[in-house]
Image 1: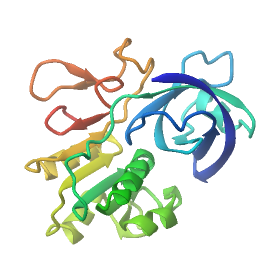
Image 2: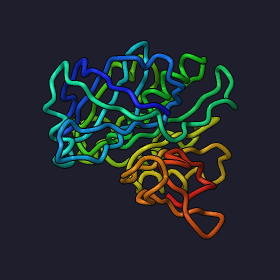
Image 3: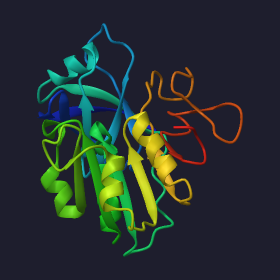
Length: 255
């Protein structure tokens, strides 16, 4: 967990209200696990709190992020240009467990919308270790998809759109019912809206390896403010998404 000032190398819009951000600097030595996040300072004195951004990858001297513009702060960030210096704190949180997997085993990645961002880093890590990956990428409409060519070069990909403009017409659960009921996976990984994670936990309730990254508002990123709590499943109380997560097993929390 370290603070660094990085330079904006490139930024582009990859879907409606969705941007790819590439920062360059001294990041190669960071101990990063897919699923972790960073807290980034918006370059504006009116926005003092850092914003959380899930890490896509850290490769060589580049930190790769994807985010959606959901407020004034991220709107300002989307207007930054190459050369802008940005303060980054992290990596923070935990990552997706993978140590139990062996080469040639099969896993399933399930993403809803921007939830594909942290799963892309996981995908690359898994493929590099010889794991066979199937992906379900669910969005509302075709325009919300991104990185299709890269995903398809690494894995078998099923797409779902709620409006039927691309791939399977329906939601992720309907696609699984139609195409994947006979499939067996060593692990299930997910990231996306709460409803998607709840479906994953229900459908795979008897599976021993189900891990999902939750989406919660993170104010401090270090467990001090309790803005990001997630209900614990086996005991009264809560977990903090920033400190105990953002990746949890289905046995730990109520998604």
